[in-house]
Length: 110
Length: 110
DNA sequence: TTATATACCTAAGATTTCTATGTATAAAAT
DNA sequence: ATTTTATACATAGAAATCTTAGGTATATAA
View (cartoon, rainbow over the protein chains, first blue to last red):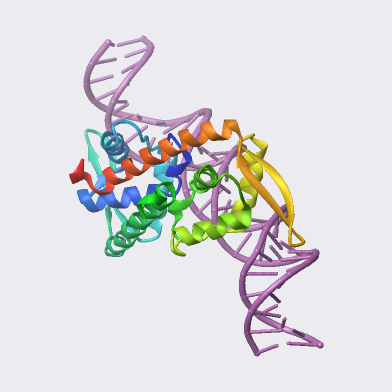
């Protein structure tokens, strides 16, 4: 994750949301998608992403399907049932986080 | 910092913004102010805050004035000149971060 | 033939935060 | 009178996350 420290702690939420949106994705695809969505402002590093995916899988949040495309390995991840309900909580937390940060940055509006 | 992982990385930005807003504050006051602004949703822990304040001071972002009030020590922190310009950058980063996160969570709006 | 893009991976270190604990005074509650 | 709560500072060890820096391998573009 390049850029500011602020993104610390948001990686798994980003991954879960993208999987909720797109059904299934593989690691490299996630890095490209985030770069695209944020117009290059946010670059997820592989050193952060792959361990995070493995952890989410170990926790039962994600499950993996391995496929061979063009002689290259792809590991497609998708949310489990548990992962889907976790994602709902995560997104609620994210919205609360954004609200709270905006209250701090712009106290006049609240 | 209680609650979700998302707040990781945002502590110094919060502190700097509050000091920009309020001129000078002491540590305990900062914890109370954040609790108040976020209606109890965000609690800054002292184990995170004090080392962060010391680090910002060591970096020349903050300077400290020690006072004795009611027989109790207070260390008032305020932004240095360097700290003030750093704060402007931090707040711009925060706004960009929030924009990016909203693009991810709500891709239809962008 | 070399560089870039695709696609996975890990290990060591840095950084941040949490948990737990410590000191001390003042005020409120039992 | 004593205990709890609030105020006010602090640190040390552990946990979590991310960066940096490498590694493997195939396919395509320069």
